[in-house]
Length: 196
Length: 196
Image (cartoon, rainbow over all chains, first blue to last red; front, side):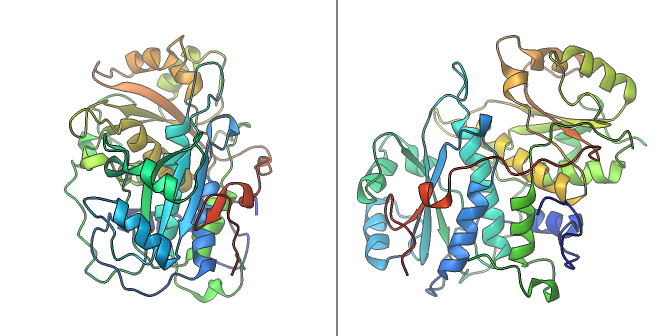
């Protein structure tokens, strides 16, 4: 498991282009979901991907709760206003403990963001869709606190993000408009394009 | 839960297990690097992976500079004290603009963290190693500011992270000690293990 290439007969591992394609094909999906239940095996794999993200000084500030119980999902949905991800058959709630990695440095936001990105990629790789809902959850009306209460989350954690998980029931959106590569990435100095 | 069987016949995209294996096999590599130059094609693919990360309200607050010019690399290295990644043949410097996504909400840290995680995965997928160096760069002695000056980065950007890129010349480290899954991830409520 520590080799970066060729650790099984699978040509996919170490196949950078395939991973690149996956990274480039991931979208923020805000459409409706099919009602099909997400197998626990898949949810577990997605959670494992999240927990495998690095964390500042290995403080492991991120914790996760997957919700697939229809009753609890309904309670969570009722607390999310305006509603998002209302049709998703599963939801992952991302928790953080904002403890310092050293001195006054806290990397909890970096930690959970890396975990979220891993999960978004795992979700797409397993054939599902998702979207990173954070601002909506942590804005002044503190929806995240209400979700945390429903899930029995202790006070030292903050619930910062919700990721729906499910099979898309609408078309996957096209890539969002982004500034071109040459305006955001350079070689050997600010603003310097690829030359050789 | 995460069997590794049968996925070799699957096409690469949508092959969740292969991606999972990649995510689980990524390590923070702090060893020496081989001097071999990283092809521009690979550096470009890594940068593209970073830019493909989502960003809050699509503000695209993250920019990137790949450095492979030996003279500029030497200048950067001289400014990083104590030294890290001193033997890497390439380095990616991560820049952020801390602009608000809406009202007073800024997601720049989330944005660049997702971009970094994408790049770390792309780096490993392409056969290289790396490590997320952030605290060292943004601590009180502000090494990042010195690196930014060397690279001609305008003041509205902050240089927050350096990622070495190269082929490992030492053994890839074993996984760091992490708390077990059941202490960090639950189903349908805080602390609730996988039951069915």
